[in-house]
Length: 429
Image 1: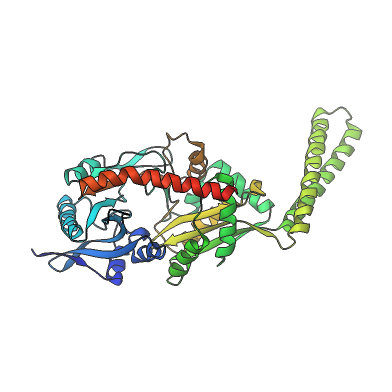
Image 2: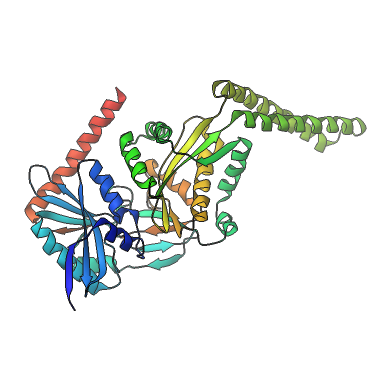
């Protein structure tokens, strides 16, 4: 058997990725182009051939290490190959290491899309590969630990929703809270649609970032992603818009219904003046009426300020040939009670189902054991959709230059922390 490891063109890589069981947008040349647009990374596509048949491939991001002159080689979400074939993984690794030494690589980094453990919505294990870390370590990779949140390059946990099932089966898996919220969105007059508006998306994302204390990327980053992927129908931008006029109509209808019910109760009490059920219900109606009137006043203010409505939530979905990822999203601080973030997620999910995708990935969460409030809120939100809870094995490094590697991994976290502090300081000014 003849084995060949060589660089391949973008089209060859993408065709391989889009027909592979490990299909992931981060392993396409599109993602390599996106990262290279930022300036720090370059990318190259490589493939392993056995008797002229492509058996494994990878989109590798290359980045120079400041001062040291060597490079980092990163395969986001791992290599495109059959990880159950250990001989194939071994051969690919050996060939990649030989290639990397010629490229002056300090270390190879990867975080494979392998189910270390997958659980259904009830917590039952449906798939696991507990020996994966040991298998990778035998090949020379250094495991970077079982982190619980977002400490590494990619999240180690995510939720994936199976879209091959009937729509009724999917919605039946949603939590009661979601079903209640979806009812609320109808009352608020929320309408979702596909909209090519990155300016609006970024405005909402920035609002979310300020509220939740995280740093968003520059707008150009999201615009570049969208422009590059949209032309090949690999990205969509969604919005959820609030219409105060519709909300007012619902509220006034509800107020009229309560008034009619109250009139009926008054007539009934003329005949039975001490009937407790009717008296209690009249008290309830009075409370509900007072609450409705306050909401109507608030909504009239919103109508005056936003006569044509206002977009409350926006999101970007990235796709491959058969899968979708809900990568970016934001929700305005105002009218969060309207549930626009729930409405837009459901709209994205069923748009992806209509397009025939295998699953939709909620793009990262934390461990169930994580107690950091910075992450638990979004974790609980994503959990409500009844998806499969997936734990990946995490990040691996294959070290080619040990001394330089040790210096870098100690310096880089400090530099990154300092940069984030400077950015936060600048934002507060």
